[in-house]
Amino acid sequence: MLKKENIIVLLSGGMDSAVLLWLSKTMFKDVYAISYSYGQKHSIELEYAKELSKIAGVKEHFIVEVPHLKQLKGNALTDENLEIPSENYPDEPPITTVPMRNLIFLSIAASFADVYEIENIGIGIHSLDSPYPDCRAEFASSAEAVINASSVMVAKKKNRIKIFTPFLGMGKTDIAKLGRELGVPFEKTYSCYKGTVPPCGECATCRQREDALREAFSDTTA
Ligand SMILES: [Zn+2]
Image 1 (cartoon, rainbow, N blue to C red):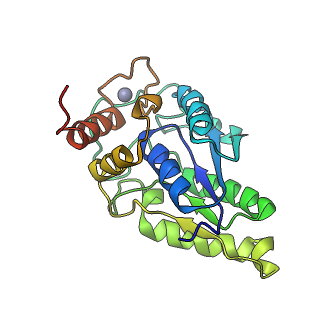
Image 2: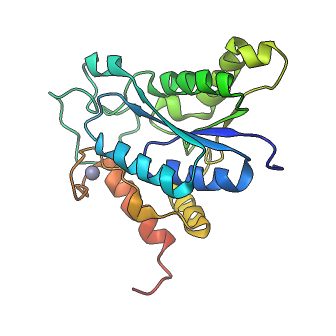
Image 3: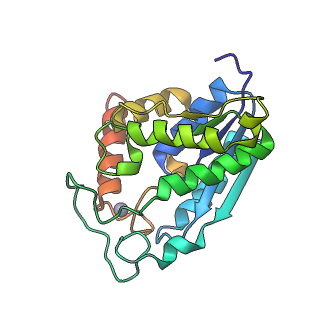
């Protein structure tokens, strides 16, 4: 890419979106970030997202309240009565699935893209067979189609909006290795679903993160 286009990156504060932010800095002209407060138990990650945005020097970091997700019962990220499981993901959509979360997040990011004339929306979804339906390739391409069909910018024939998903088909270790090359400050990222300080080390994201970072940095001497 010739650094002619702009991007808005969905930034959770976790390692995948941080690597995506750093990668975007090498590929796009203006880089914006957007983070969501949706009643997640691990809202501590928002503080990490703010710090990452500062370090990366983004053009603007939007923080958006999405209050209705808190009303949903049945998923362990926003339902206070459900515990975050201390185990790895099963094959089917896990209890930590927040229904339509990425569709909502992308459509809100698309509102900003339309107004600020940003041609790309970055989302750090990875691995084609994710247990989360809204982290799959089919979801991303369908979302791109509907966003373009709704866009004022596109209707005025200015630009098309692309969903930038460079990590689709990549494993978490490869993302960590890329982040290492790009100089991502992993100590400023946070992924734990339980929201504890320090991270619990037991939930699925903690396990995946630790494995990926261990493998990516395995050749460095302590
Ligand atoms: Zn954890």
